[in-house]
Image (tube, rainbow, N blue to C red; front, side, top):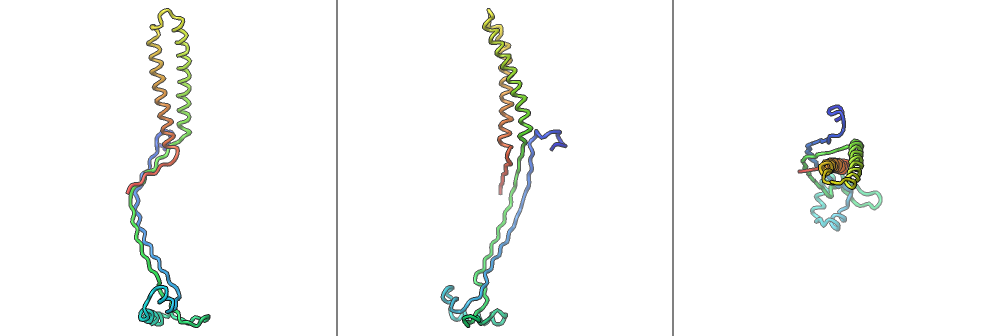
Length: 170
């Protein structure tokens, strides 16, 4: 930004599109007994016998050395989840320090106009025809209004841009 415009007063915009596809697979495998399968998972005796026969063929069968029951290492739960997301992200950044210098310049000018208005007020009180100062007062008030609007714009930009803002759409 500095190399392009010479300062950081411009608002930085960064737009990025994204697409993410996430495949999650969760498998719960554990050593189980026939008794546990029938009691906890409500398998039938036939289902347990078939599962244990398959486990023996695959080398996933053992007799537990502690309680001497037959066990098979079986897939107890199998979950698949596919999540696909796409969208657009826009990031905006602005610099508070840069705007602070600009705001100070506006404040200095407003103080000068205040001093000028105070002088005009004194002149109007001392003048025999205060309407002769109407044009000068209107010009100063117009300039004060312009400066006030410009300074408020800087403050609004700082409030919106001081923190990074993300917009996402899908």
